[in-house]
Amino acid sequence: MLSKPEFLNLISRHLNDPSDLETQLEVEKYRSESPENDAFFLEIKKLWELSGKVSRINEVDVDQAVQKLKSHLVKQSPRKSAFWLTRIAASILLFSIGYLIYHQSTKTVFTVKSTNENQVDSVKLADGSVVILAENSEVRYPDKFDSIREISLLKGQAFFKIHKDPNHPFKVLINKSNVVVLGTTFNIKMSKSKIDLGVITGKVMFTPYQNGTASILTAGQALTYDVIKKEFLTKTAQNSDSWLTKELVFVDTPLEEVCKQLTDYYGADIKLKNNKHTEKKLNATFKYQTLDQVLEILNETYNIKISKENNQINLITP
Amino acid sequence: MINIKTGTDLYVVINENQVPAFTSFYRQFYQKLLLTSDKYVEDIFIAEEIVQDVFLKIWEEPEGLNEIKLINSYLYRSVINASINYLNRQKNIERHHLKIAANYSEESLIELDEENELIVLINTEIEKLPTQCKKIFKLSRFEHLKYKEIANLLNISERTVENHIASALKTLRSELLGKKTVVNKLQNKKFSIFLSFLLMG
Image (cartoon, rainbow over all chains, first blue to last red):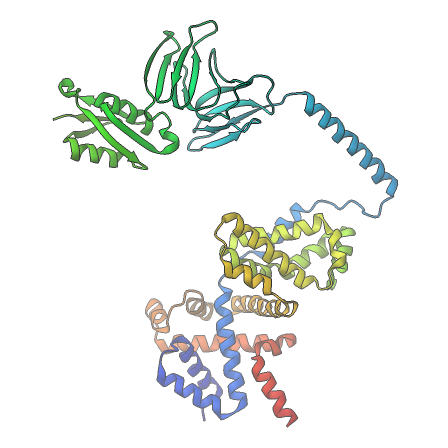
């Protein structure tokens, strides 16, 4: 018969490698010799299993956790305090809530929503319209609309999905310019010097400045307005919402325009070299692709050479 | 230390603003509840947040406590619910977790508490082991290394590793058995029944 320490070593060997048949048989034999042996084995086995679970809490700092909780505990106000006091408090509260509701129902409250780098956020307006903000953008909107629905794009880029309501035109103010719509989806990108407007569905009216000539854009059309020169040029709305859809679509697009759109989308400076072949056009759809993947595809299909100098990427046609 | 058993016990502590009693009650349950939350959220840092939030919520709104008969089970239930809510928010809830939560009877929660109590005790006792012995035991039980791997890692014989593990198990067992309340818990239930059968016979 094995003495206890030897038996303990045997059990520990068995637990370390339960697949070792020889050790297992030895353990079984010892266990069957007496109920005490068996109990001892079961205790050690349980200890073995439980100590495996210890690892999860082994590095937890309980003292620190208690300190942290303590710092969060606010002093209890006595609960059994006189009832009249709570009643007065309740009526004051009711009164203030009433006032607040009254106040809010008469006064329009404006909210400014802004996004940081790499952050996209959306705003649902009182009429059910949705504004999706691209990164580094800012929009100001009221909590309710009067006869005219009006919001301001203060900075950056946004995609608008406007709820259709022919009786209440929807107006987006962009500094001195504005866009009026009835119910459509469109994208606006603004910077200090220009405004890009792309219409995805429906019809919108763009007014560059007060009393300026308005231009009407329909689905698929886009324009770029030069704020300084007060000029605009129309083009196709191709890819104006690509920041949202993560999809770049090119249909018979001149390579020069492709470079511009890639520059816009990826924020890298991409230039076309060798102007002899600018008549070359691109037909392609890129979805969720990195710039390097896109460049690789251009390289393979159009035999365009890619060279990178400093922060500029040059596409060189053959 | 005040013995807090029922919801009313805890309510009195909170209502009388007894911060030390409340924090020591927290300390008493902290690791045990962490183990339970961690089973769901599988992230000990998130588990820490969840357990703390459960206690803060109780502190801030203790009114419901008077209805609670067994505070232990109530705490486990609250932590389990908060953990499931967290997972729901994370949208990666596994269905079996929900089922387990629904099936937690008062008795099974008491059993769970006993097991967690043991794990917490073992944790304390492991930290008291001699340095080398502790190191080897942790490598085996926490890192799941085989004796051979530990022997190679520390450049010692496999037999030495085995001796250290056996010595750790021996110390842990006697330390735990020394704590009176634990004796029955460590012993397998089936065996206890078997033993009482023998004694009767």
